Image (cartoon, rainbow, N blue to C red; front, side, top):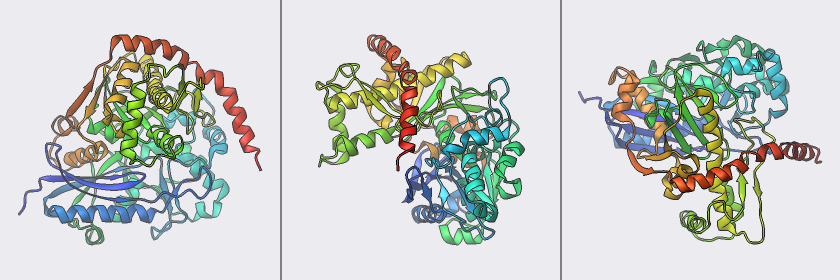
Length: 514
């Protein structure tokens, strides 16, 4: 009998599913991947066919099991795109397309739902106090409320409102089950008591019998059944272990399990999390359940991270014919020749609204200070500096409330590969920015859950000490540049307050358009 010396982290992200086999030391052994289609039927509506989640997982797992003997796989676990769900009928078929975390169709109903859950207490909305999520467009609770109001027939016909983790677990095992760390981001989970919230569910018209069972990360949820095995190449009987949301698992994959170390995902969204033991709520962050099942991540999130970089390449650099990687190298070269502050140009990176600390989906991106003296190198420098400034704003607010300073960031995501960008983050924040060797941090975090569930390690601290990605790059802040950036930051941090009414007026004006 073969030794079961591998675990698999299935990373079901917004654009692709990756199935990666890892060994006990956190070394990537083999992988498979397949894309997922994202559709936009109307402006600010983002949808996916849940069958694409399954078909891409099947393709990825098939590729993987052709490379490694499935008899070596001790367990699998899932990392999922957060705030995304599918309404399913009794046969597990989609009642309507799944709604993705980018979706904003329910924006007008967000305050109404918050009021329906209960009145504020000490300035904190009831829905925030229960879920850990401030009143904002991103939680699934808003889209469930939208279905109840706008598509009542489909809402009534739905037998199971499944997050991506719960959906894939059901396809693999026949049981609808998910992780606390996947249920929590939906905004309908009592983050303190670790149960589906009766108060929020009553407001959105959903009972617990129409939701997956939620269990602790690292717990075996079920085993791969014959149908799941036939489809994927996994062996029937392979344990499926509760994983979590991709953001929290990225933190686990980097080993960020103490308050002085924050993970920094410079990806499509700019996401950072600081670990803490206590259940605490604040407008400075959203409280996410830890993928260890103990403690929490106090998380900042800017939806327009490298999304903004892609926008810049697609619009400002639209006429360029060079390959995309070469274009970004050229842009970094041009930006490196520009002084701090981009010649008096600031960029406010609210291309998709702002979450913490303002929670304003009407906010929009801005270049401020443009003149005829500025070129695209200045704009790109302002873009990189703007994202770093926003992270400095977020982290400073969390530090002020927690009373514990962050000493270093562990960077992951595409942006972390850029030494130029890492240095800007270090100089702006005044903190060390390290680069993790692990590109696939969310999959590695899921693999750690599988390793705990398989009994390889007695707890998550042990798993992290053995498997977390090692550091392969380190950017130290330069004191003089940090001082200069602090002067610029004093200008930056006042921008939103000065533009808030303008953003609201433009939003109303656009809403009045024929």
